[in-house]
Amino acid sequence: MECRWSKLLTFGDKVVIAGYFYNGQNKPCYFGATYEFLDDDHTCEGTIGLRAASEVEFGDDGHAIAWAMQQ
Image 1 (cartoon, rainbow, N blue to C red):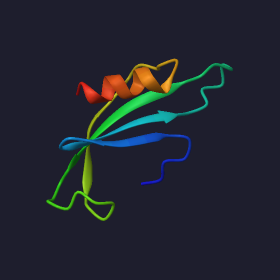
Image 2: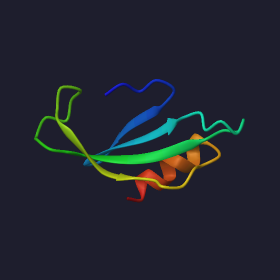
Image 3: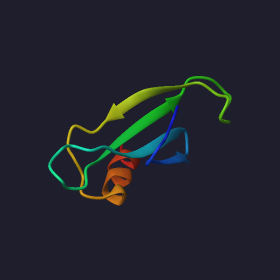
Image 4: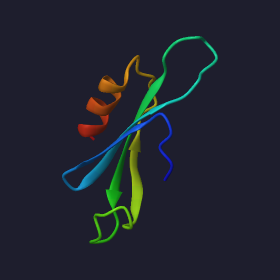
């Protein structure tokens, strides 16, 4: 997984991400995503799968991470 311009954290039994993308409207646009570990390897070599991704746009990465942590 490449995380250019993103924040990635291991949070308990999941991985949470705040990602940034350009939406063409000249404003910050962040999304939150939560992944779950699919095996017992919780290192960077382990396998993860998408659990949830936000459908709303956030104005900063803090709100995006907060959303992901609650999933």
